[in-house]
Length: 133
Image (tube, rainbow, N blue to C red; front, top):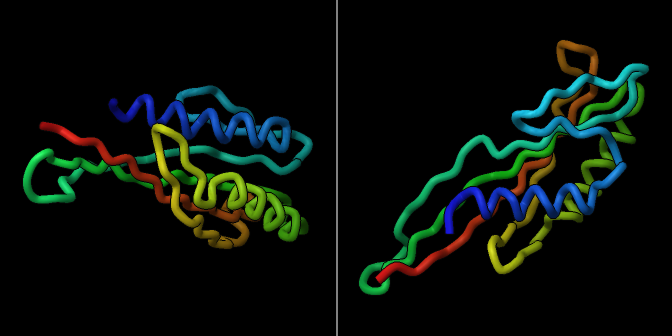
């Protein structure tokens, strides 16, 4: 199983659990920032890596990376962004399926960005182990 199946499973989890909460900027899809201003989010998995995690046979190869969900709200709505970040955290904290296992989410308040949005980032580490003979 490759990265695409893993990516699809993580994306499906977020789409299903987040449905209608905010508009979402998805990778490789056109997105217009909401007007009038209302909260929105961005989903991304910017990279991943493989490494062997054992010695001997069968070889166990771990695919690992981080899911990033960025939450944007009006600067006066920082509490709303925090509540949305908490919702993301609850969606992914220790969630697992047959395809992927997530760890504890990390939340970071970035503050007001250069475009006037209050930003909170949620980072969720994930992994999948596979055996190879």
